[in-house]
Picture 1 (cartoon, each protein chain N blue to C red):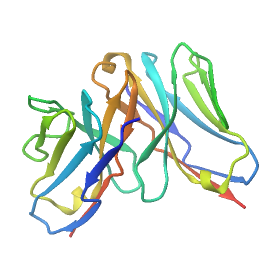
Picture 2: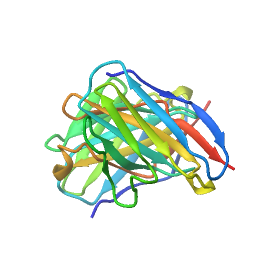
Picture 3: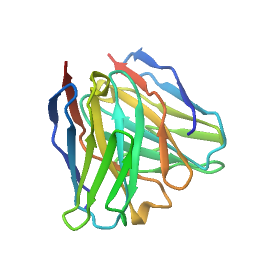
Picture 4: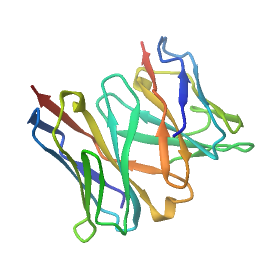
Length: 114
Length: 113
């Protein structure tokens, strides 16, 4: 079935690395996404990874995909107070690649302490 | 990436009334979607807005409650009809740009009293 799970809360100190984890149940996922939602704002697409990739790096962001364990992670290096937000993991299923339907996790609230 | 705007940004409405939310994109896009984010919750797809034909609704959402229009490739509206307090949510428009990139508007924060 369609299910994406994330831990609800993560607290880190400024300058540390943050790792936000996500698990999904459907092995037919084609693309997996990370979105950021700041308070009172919409969703910002941070990055995405195709299911045949293991890793994708974009500046301070590193996405790791373990397809065997159906586990996705987002690492933020040198975390800043401006990174405080809710981070959503999402997947698009192979059957939905033409429809664009995204399945979202519950979101992880990242708190960055100065 | 596409630039998406929504109107209104927020509203407080009385029970039993209806509200129409507008979504405008700065470029022509094939796919437009409407999502709901209930307080403290994740996002759920309401429907896909199809240009020139009826919207495609997800399970649990019906046209009578959430009528959608898509008159062209840059604009769509979502109406929340006969509102109740349970409809208090953030309603977000999104568009698919490129093959697998999906971008979201800023959202409309609806409170029903």
